[in-house]
Image 1: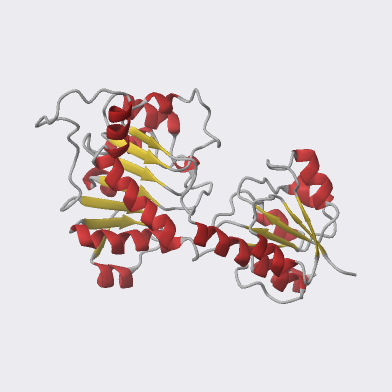
Image 2: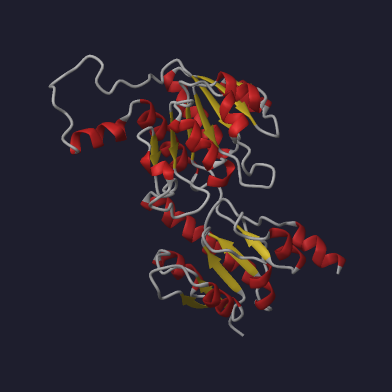
Length: 331
């Protein structure tokens, strides 16, 4: 029997579908929006493979309905939208798309650092709203330099390290905190390992690159933001819930923090009445960290290759829950 695969978005590039179609019957969500909960439950029950996005919640209820499901191909590096333990216990392989988006997200991170420090987005609004009345003024729209400042990297994975490499050109001092120390990276890239509290206290820019886990959820909250300098900036291109948004809003509104540039939020899409939208010292992006044409195509194709490998009985190149094989052997 030819295996079946459900693709949750009709925006997944055709080249990825072309990888799937020689080995599977492929059904694509025909609607221009994510599948409803009911649609997801119904479609998952019919397939052996699922190509999903980080916006699709793949939990125990979905897996309970999906009796024949063998592989979940998440088109993202993060997989907090999938209940990994549940999938493992049910013998379902979960895959992701790491590495491909590293450089693209690192580029955006540095771009956000420059944009928030030099008030680029705010200055654009200033001009568009007709507020530019004087040809030149010594203190008009002054911002902050980046060169020579201290960057704190919270999470030194692939993306955090790629950011560290980029900012050497700005002559920045770079410190980092991760739950695993990387002494080789320290030697190669002149990095200094510090505690998270020390990182927050000493950094002019703090950039977040940790996955969302129970330990990292709201790990940047009122206490942590209170450790940062009033002149410092927070950048988040990882997962929104790492930061307590209410605490961040208070810090920005009270000018206890100079600014924040956010590509991710606790609830997406961001509500129009979210108080962060009223702040001039915040840059808010619609989760575009990996949004270059080249990267999104490569992510989709890798997600498809992961699924194809699993359906052929092979080990997918980016298997998240490798223990799934150990549990199968035990059984």
